[in-house]
Length: 527
View (cartoon, rainbow, N blue to C red):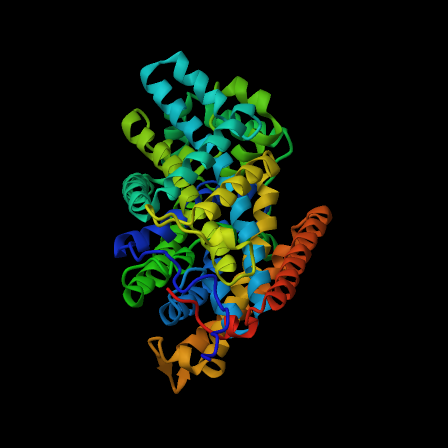
């Protein structure tokens, strides 16, 4: 009698198809990453952390990002499978750790999906304001107020709608998603280029005059006076405040590893992953650093002043500037182009488009994570089903949609705290992803042999990058932890404990079914 083969994965092939080309492989991390962090938290950080050098915070946060990018690139080339660091950590370090880190990161992505959907409402409000000002339309100015701020109830329902539409986009497969996200990427880049040109071209000394020409005569000086009258005061540089601002910067960088989670769907992973992770990370760091330096060079303390009066003296600000815009990066960029309404609208709309691009990318990462757990038999196996026509994991996308709707509701009105909460779990995940990179050349030599095998003085670059990334992210975990309210920290502890219970329950369940659990985590899943 022939020996029966042990039950390992849910099926012999994932069912996912390698349909993602090089351009889309680059577009995924760019569209996932460039959004709320750079366009909103870059501005908000100077108010939330008085004394912080915000551009420096983004530069410091970029150091572990670069080390992590190199680590993940080499791991993704050697293990080009759907699931990203869940695969790297569970195969290179420990199955429990692999599941728990990805369980925490999944929560990060789900909640961030909701945060970005809420953020996007503000950006469309700014676009309506500029369009209304250009056309002298009372209707458009009305919508500018409707879409402004997280406090507007309309924003909640718009956030829900964005999540649902994004779920449908990803449901129809990689080809549809690729077309939409590639167009969105190009539109976002065009707006960003226009913004960069104005930051380079305009002199900081002209900022007050340009602001007044854009938003109303004398508004710049009145806002400065209102800020001082309501308690704002300049604060000397503080490295501690800069470290605090770096947590918002880390959240802004989340997503540069997004291509790794699509490893089973990239056409040429050995080339695609280098461009998708490392090259994209370089582009993102350069863009964030340049824009951060330029906006604070141009407007300086006026940024925290305007943010201060927006949140603390809204009625008085409304009397100075009717339908005043939310403090966003495009708010300040548009001020540099008075009278050029088409270009102002393009800058504002591109910010909204960048955020809108984020949501489908979040869907890709979230759905592929739960898919990979299910494929390993550590989550309901139904989640690993793939649509025969669209080659998309439809149940995983449905679960992500539900989670995204909860994210919108859960963090509505408190998104700054949400960014801190979710950042800690993200850092926790990539920290161990880097550790997996550090040890893989030694504990999984057969995996390392499939990587580029770059070495410096006989030491694997994968190991060196992993060590730097692990150390840098380890520090950031503690910095992030200081900013989390006790109640939120308790919730995160409960969430992670639930993840541990799920893993142990499925472990016991699989053993009872006769599943060869040890073989699951000893092998790389089939493509």
